Structure formats: structure tokens, C-alpha cells
Length: 114
Length: 112
Image 1: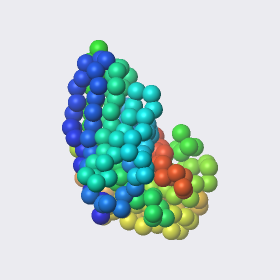
Image 2: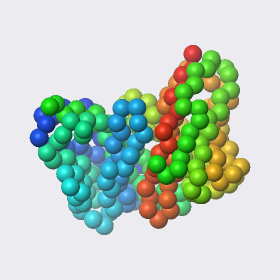
Image 3: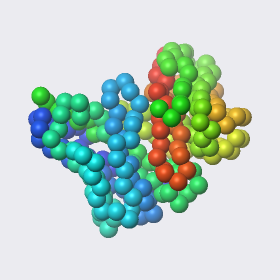
């Protein structure tokens, strides 16, 4: 089955700097890659996603890149702000199945220092 | 929030007791999921359902059972709780065709 690895497990950046989180997946059939943000004590919430027919996607300060050949994808946050501090999870899914089973990485705890 | 609620939100129980967690959704979604979240492991799928009375196992299903007798309710049961089942449990739904999952608020379960 699918296995998703995520690095680093913790990341600390100065406010205004960029943050990059990297993930790898094992199942070449995976074709959907969402990223979730989870603030302390809250539920995970989708912040951006990318499908396998796209190499890059941007939404304001957040961007995700996908390299299908290498089976890795990354989250880039520019001009970080204290409210970006949270745990970020990458995930992979094979949208060909009828139940959209999603496998999550172990998470990255991002701290933005004012 | 996709109309998802979970109950109870917090529960403390003792080893060996049965526990049932409830996930309720108001938008008639077909697909529902139960995850557990533990430090260093992310979110791990316990069981999922693709319709009334249609359920299947996820990657960490041992010690858990589920039932879905109505579209809106997906129940997770720990038949005999163990300390290793202390965790935060999240229910989720997905919208077919979008692959996106939406999570409930979570239930923090402590097994003493």
C-alpha cells in the first residue's frame, strides 16, 4: 500500500522568511496530493492540493510542487507570519478508487518566530 | 465545517470497558472515515464507510469495529479499551469527485 514520508518533523523560521516542507510517496498510482494545516487543538483543514496532471499550484503565499518521476511533492510558504505556526500534513490518494482513501504523512510542526 | 459533529468531545475510561464514539453529518455524504491521531504518526485510517452498512478496514483496525445503519451516523466502537487506544479520534467525510476530506472536531479519548 501507499506510504508517505515527510520532512522535516519540526521547522522553525523567522517571520518573513520562507518555509519548505517535503514529502515522498511510494505508490506511483497516487494522483491526488492534499496539504492540511492543523492548529493546536483544532481539526486538520485543507489549505491546498495538487493533482498529478499539474506540476505546480499557487494560492497567495502558498505553493505546492509535484515531481511525479521522483515521487515527491513540496509545500512552500513565503513571507511567513506567526499565524502560519501549526502542524502541516501532506497526504497522497489514488482517486481511481471508489472511496478516495487518503494516506497521511507524519506531520511537520512549523514555528514562525516574530 | 461540512456539517460534521462528533460526540463525546472528551472521554476518560478504564481499561477493559467498551467505548462508542459517534460521528454525525448533516449533508448526506456517502463516504465517511475514522482516523486516530498520535504524535509522530499523523492521521491513520481505522475504518471507512462507502454507504449504509458498507464498511471496510483501514491500516490500524485491530481492536476497533464500526457500524453505519444510517447515512448520517458512523459509529466507532472499542470493544474492550486498552491504554494503547488513548488518542485523538477524527471523523471525516469526502465529497466524491473532489477527493477532498473534511474533518470533524475530534474526540480526545483517554484510557487509564
